[in-house]
Length: 401
Length: 168
Image (cartoon, rainbow over all chains, first blue to last red; front, side, top):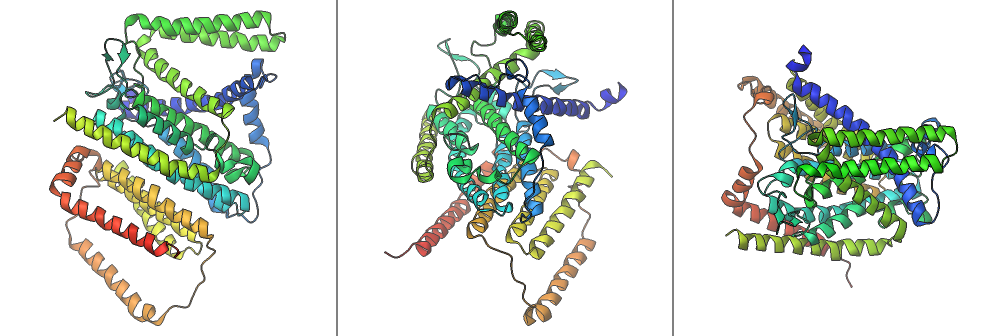
């Protein structure tokens, strides 16, 4: 206890890092489950169903499979770079998440803010600095495999990420002009933040004055994360699997996890910049805690109903009992500790909507052709985000003479 | 040894090793990677000096943009291993002594200067200059050099375009 009271920063930071890592890793695993389930629904299939009740243990099975598969290293590969690339991709993707605040900075334990691993003043620039290094994972993987398809995939991907990073960064500057700060917490609830409502009805989120910026951001973000319809680096019809063709076993899983971690990062950033971060759409009243309580109790009731009527195997029933208990625990947490549970609830709800949007896009949109991708990025998206920036600056100058 | 000192030595060694590898590596991509190592180590040194903005820009611009283009071009050209040549006579008889002279000069200067304490005191350094101060200085006090530099870069880009364009 004495050690904890003497080194609050160290202890709390370590706990936060471990907790974040655990939550993010679990979230990554279950995002794959979520994606497969949703895409399956869109294509009138069941998706994962047999490993655990409703396929709930499928991510675990996948992880074990990745761990125990044979790890093939191509003999002609450049071995140092080949091994470095997946580590680089995953480490950078996870580091970026540590910069994101998921709740107000004034909620503290032992004098340390609870909801952000690190709250630095130039958080946004640091975030862009780290994500801009993410290209190396893909480019080096493509190059070091010493094989034609990965090289093509790596080249395409570098070109794509360089092109869309410009639009991504420019589309965010409009928000920066409104907020007047680079601190991610202050962008949400600083002096020029997103608290309050217009006409007591519409929340003062940046997405309304910056709608064009948000459109540019979300398109560029999907392209940055190499997802459908911009997943040309791994276009399987032409490039086998793109940059990670020669990677197997857990190294492939690391690229996979990095991709999902990047999706989480850009969704978090979109939430913070454009959708009020952890702020509630209703203004943060006391009664709001009944919304998550109702949602979690409803989910628990649904699972209980499914447990009784649908599931036959006793093991699956047992697993669903745990899920029901989890939902009850979440409901109780929201009811008894709203101060700690409400900001993450809103934040994660908003991210979940973005994740659904990602999966929705994957389930419905065809892939771009490479020349379409390039001309779209440079000839439409870049001028649009620039025009949005100039317009925002002019309006801001007129309103603040 | 305090934590800032440990970090300083780790980054300093990484930077020097990266710089040496940059010259010695025969594969162009390895040279580029070593240069990235140097850039990132320098960025962490800037952080220790209490300049987070410069550190972030160092990573964002040099490691994240310029070096990405380097790596991209090397991959695009699919440049193979470099060939080694024998030392040129000028490099051997003029370059090496001059290099040693420079090294001696730096060592001499380091020995006779006051020991700096900025990095050692990194943890207790004065609060870093804010982004606001930096941008005010850049866009008020140094507006003309700033604009002149950007025009210079624009001219360089146009020049590259003219040179690279195929004649119709």
